[in-house]
Image 1: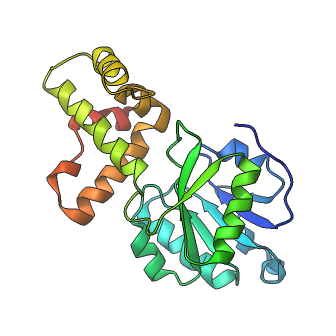
Image 2 (image 1 turned 180 degrees about the horizontal axis):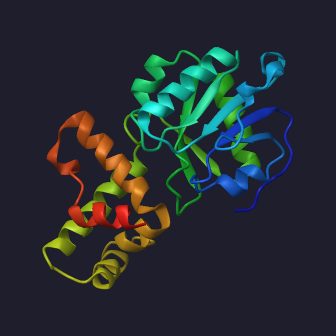
Length: 230
């Protein structure tokens, strides 16, 4: 991904190494913290820093994610934006007053366009400048829901492909070919799963199933096995 290195805004970025944009984020002209080795709130002077947005790109369990965001909310008096691709975004925003926006970068987009949610114009403007640094487009949505729209839909398609595999309807290569040439998808479900990451897909489906109880979100056993083997 090509990046633009400069901006007039100050961004504080936190990430874990399992986020797909980790290397890109680390190379930006921002204050960057690898949360697995060092955190900004460990520094005594952190209360006195100035920034326009605190951006969280951690991929951790829902409980740990909520705990981190609450910690950031206490530590910083600036808008917080979090990558909530595989989480119940509405719940987090209700529970963390300083969480002013959410993004969906954990699922790579074939169109280089990513959904985002911003409560106010200040957060929206800051995010749009951040998107320019990454050379990506943003699509503002009214609500992050659980996993936004694209991640939620593609996870269900991939899950159904794994159910088809369980039923021995076709081979992975044949299913990928059928979806690419039959419905003009840029990638087949199994190709997409490899690009996105089986664990990310499983995390989102499990969150959807836990919150809604809807059986259409029940993860395929083959998908679960694939995620646990990696």
